[in-house]
Length: 622
Image (cartoon, rainbow, N blue to C red):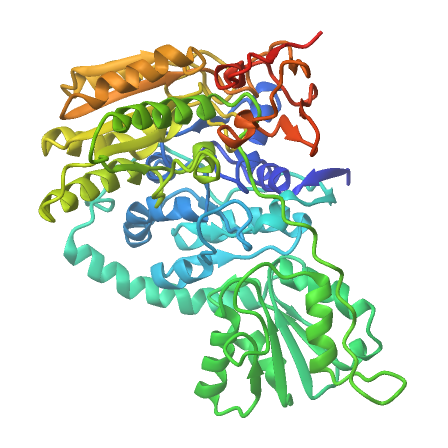
């Protein structure tokens, strides 16, 4: 068999193609994004001619699209990150009750840490809550094999199945053996009208709930028969101590055990699925006195082991997060697990005393920052200066509240901009601002200057309902749409306002301004944030008005546009006031205790700093 060096997300994509994938949809979100991008690359390269791929407007839409394809007998897949599952949860809960005809795999990439997310959600909980099977790969190789297995299980039980890779599985590389195409159990015949099977009436939901519970019990037995590489396994060490783990924590645990002499004396169990294979786990627990459970995020495996012990009258002591033996938040590492194993296995140094290994010193923290030349910096600064000037002439300053959203512009919360007061979830800033405005009025305060910042991709994702609500309820709010012509934070994916599909082919381009106009908003201003004076004046004009007003800041992300010539500082003119640093926080500008300088490798020549320099010391570098 051929082998290929693949990122985990690439392995999932190729595993799906091996399984006969015909339709894939999703919304970009780290760490899941590269799955759909790989599929689009395969389609564009002619290696998947029978595949349809799209970036959908949000995760809910993506899942509903995939459900339609699966009802028609196709094998379909939808991708998202863990917070995207919140958006898609409504259709997914109901979909498990209705079932599918073709296989449907929902890839939900969890993000322990969290590294690039709002939360550390554990999708295994959602699997238990929604009564949906979950596969938890521990490596790119397993992700490749499990993707195919997930499609088989989905078709066998006519249920959606969740594949739950985590960040380190998604973004690590491995040499993956490429297997021959899988055979489908049946061919797709298109959508069939049959006894309202896919119409979710209460009576049908009750009958299907009964069947779901039967299927879960059947799945638990079925999963016990899987090949150990694909799913669940135990080693047969004759020991009184055991280790249970799953996902990337299993890989870390195996690596940590390689360096410990006592490794051969401990029995290990990999739990990589929900429902858990109870027969496999009972075989693992037999004869053990204690078990250390190693799993990132929540104590899912630990809770299942406690349940199984209680149900079967076993006195095995289960140690993990619930007992305080493992951290209950944050990402795990080989070094951390080695330390915990050292203690659990009772290892000792030459002096006879317990001695934990020395952990590596933590890396220095690098706070996230808006890129040099980012148009969002100019947009935020225009609003900030307009509000400052507005309040400068007032005896009593008017409160300004800045509600943010999810995207690069969340970084506007950092000093010196300090322009994001709230950030909840995608699309929430517009609704949050309405609630804050209503509360201030109810408290008898002067209505605040209420701003809601939202990006162009997020506008289409979940921003429109909040705007509809604002118009309908006659809110007093200024909406700032930061249109940088891409989905920037996740790597520059297209969205409905760009006129491009995931493969780069032309798509219908939807105008943000025309959408706003269709909602009855009359106060709409479009400006280039790098035309700084004009942008500031445009904001100032909106401050004097009431109702729903919108300013659309239009300038492309620096990652998708060509940078200009870098700027430099005339040392003779520079007064070292450092206003260019203290007002903007651009990473290209620094001060070394004697002079201010601009790093030409970072500067994009946006010119914003020229507008704040009172000495006119900033110009094009020679």
